[in-house]
Image (cartoon, rainbow over all chains, first blue to last red; front, side, top):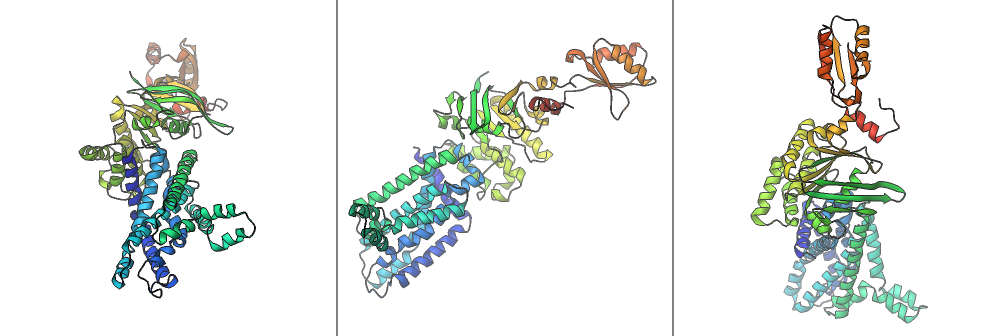
Length: 246
Length: 315
């Protein structure tokens, strides 16, 4: 694994987001949606508490919609334009390419997330929040975004069509979030054995993100997201290898 | 001569289709190998296997001694590749694209700058370095791809149809560039433009239906033509019929046919020998005035057809 190659590929991919208006449109929509969800859905003011829980707790739902839009181009476009042939005949391994592209998408998401800093200023102006909790929640949210991105990147390698990549990634992300949702759990809880119910809910982003969004960083939650990213990216590399020339 | 590319019994099957079926050849330093064949013959597939993009069904490829299956990174580091259609990152400028390639190729600092500048100059794209690649004309896009392939001065170059879709001036420039680099590299060029056989190559491999049908020099390829060393001749002040029977009677002549659309005859030699001098001597000995006399080169399109479509009429 050549770290420099990962860095070069990441840099190129990251700049690629800004070569077109896509990045700016995405960031603006992301900020509008986080603002909207924090103030209207999360009742930021009405709660009367100096924290960013309303902001972070809705991230899984925003990511379902927005992360596939970031990840859909990663491999689908590469294969459609034929540049995958160029990339895969440069002296880089497929794992370096997969990681480089994933890191670029992740860094871009991190940037979009950081641009919510006015919320942080607001909450610090209005009260005395626990900024440690906010930083922990921020990192947790970023980690979860990585999970969504790894799914999206892998799906993007399956097709040359970005719209198909978007839709399939969205559906799979939805499944990963919903499996911890109350209604789904209740549906299974009525008849399925408790171990199965636990297994389904333990696969959910919601289950693992809930604690994180309150600022509690549990190693098991971190391990969950990191292994999820690793597994999806590994599958991503296998798919790129198998389908690059189709 | 040092062998740079060795290919043994290379095959690629897509289901029941044998795209490449047991191809073997090697290319040495200084050789420019023209890889000819009809569309779908397996040229691109073979090149994709040499560059490690496709994995072969069977067979081995070695580039500069490295096996593409066991050490693909070393193979890729030693070659420059222009894929068919010259794909690039459309939203980048040639400048940032070439810098990216240079970085991946392990070039740093002033070496990187020099390599990018030299490649841009050789591919003649210095005037468009800061325009997005997607806005460039087809010819410039192709040359950006070429600049990318030669950037790290690789010992081996694989160029898939480097002049396809270029205008005559651009073709000439690309050929000049390849000729400039030919001396210290091993180059494989795929093409179906037959004039490039002479303009570029010192060796040809003709492939059809996944198999090698010919491997030799351009002269050998031409000598397969029935027109090879044929002589077109006409004389003044003599009955055409008399002249024809005279030509047919000569012992070094295999056959004679009248030229279409002009006075005179085309004379085919026995065993493809050169007969120009002898023929003109015999005609002069009869005291006739030669109006026109020239030897023909082989016709590559005819050879190409007869090699790749053996069942078709070679007319």
